[in-house]
Image (cartoon, rainbow, N blue to C red; front, top):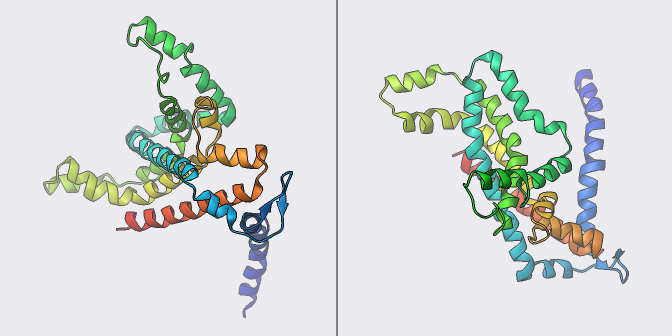
Length: 277
């Protein structure tokens, strides 16, 4: 072993130790807790059992998980449909304006996530300025998001997670060689063919990254459904917080975490395989 390789391994050790201690260790602990029993007054009784996983497969909890999976998927797809034209616009405008537009995209990160959600709740509330303005103009007769709070939750998710889709797409499209589009058009390709055969293949890695950056946190989100849903909707994030903080059923909460992590890994692998085709 050469001196350079020994130095490389020595320099790599702190990073490996950090990942093992603060990432792999907690995950293994969650798996361990999920195989134990709940104590009489909460906590964990160290008795090996798989009862929590059997309980997690109940139709009630499966419906909650499917609702979360549906919300996360719709949020990611909605962000993608909005972020692609936004990113293309940002990447093709004059360079001196790109910094301004990029700053506008990043501006929400100046404030806290919870503060932004409260502000959004005030904005789209029944007595909020948006509904008041649209009512005065005669555009609506009843307040928006009143009949179905799931729409308000979706709107809040897209609003908060849209920058996570815009940024990787912008980085990819900014490096895009515009002469490829001109060459495709010279060869007789229409706009649809240019997008499918030229733009999309080069943007797929960024799409994959942005999709997972939105899908993964959206699957376990609990602040937005709690604040904008008004306690009328139940998703995995809310269910997990209730099990750990209110019901104090840590084994059951841990089993839900393990199942959710497994699904995220599975979806990531499938999505990567599909987008590589």
